[in-house]
Image (cartoon, rainbow, N blue to C red; front, side, top):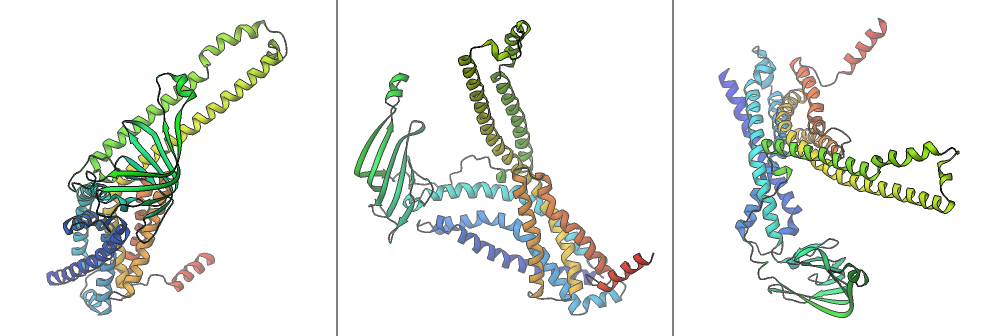
Length: 470
């Protein structure tokens, strides 16, 4: 029996490592293609590219490993059944659970390892990955001017509608925001067209703008003066903008700034952050409620209205005022209501973003636990399914495993998209795909233990007939 366990374990481990390496290579190439725009044309050293790939690999491990477990379990048990080895083992009195025992222990151990890997290695790699991406984006900022979005280059934020030309040097609808030693965009330059005239290896980015306007906000201590002259505007046919890149291109790729993103936090940090965010959310609601209560003048309402109402004997309290005053009161009330609605809408948007951030932290926390259970459940789907379909190799098992895994993956993605705006619970979103797969694993294990097919139509029909006879 020990030899059988060793044979099954070695076969499974060899198949798992092979499937994992192949899938990792595929997903790694897909990641390189995804981030090719950030790497191409930057003259990066080989060690920086390898570092980039090493930082992106851990996040792929938690995606690839469940698929590799599902695929390898289908392949191994399918091959054992196809070669009649599984039947020979069962003929000696061994049950399916006994044959799977060594692999069950291994999968449980693997699930624990996956939890610690996602809790420590993935979070550290995510932190380094985002910082490295930020540092790479600073190299050769001429390549960083993207279409349709603002690109930060030194003290300037540059947005272009379209880039064309053999080197992408011609620009249309250029908007430039120049940073200053104060908060806000005080200097704005807009032009219809533009051209990058500097050489690709130059330390000076020369941006020539045509047919545009230059806006510079004037800040005066006297409010009345700033109100009469809020900004300076000038028109230009041609304007040359020189940006010094000598300091920008001098990038330390090992520099890491402290960032607080949910994907970078382990279980302990996530719990602490979630508590802080929930407490802050409650305080925000209290502040909003207090502001709206004070804005309604509810405290002084009784003291102002009750004495007048007691003395008034007419049908309508507005009869106390002249028609012109009544109109002013109605206008004031409508303006107050509209202003209150506007304030509530803006606060709703702010709170929705904060709620979305809290939900992402909850999902990131529970994903670490759900992933471990998913590895175990997918094994209990793959192993019985392999004994039922009795097909080894990479052909049919690959198709079946991809269908099951894509179902598992897309259910999780769909649930998490719903959970971001609290359409469903973020905790349920993290566990939903695992919860759906659990009864499937129980059903398949039960069918494989009884040596039955996945679905027996005659058996179902017979049960229906028996039910109607009763």
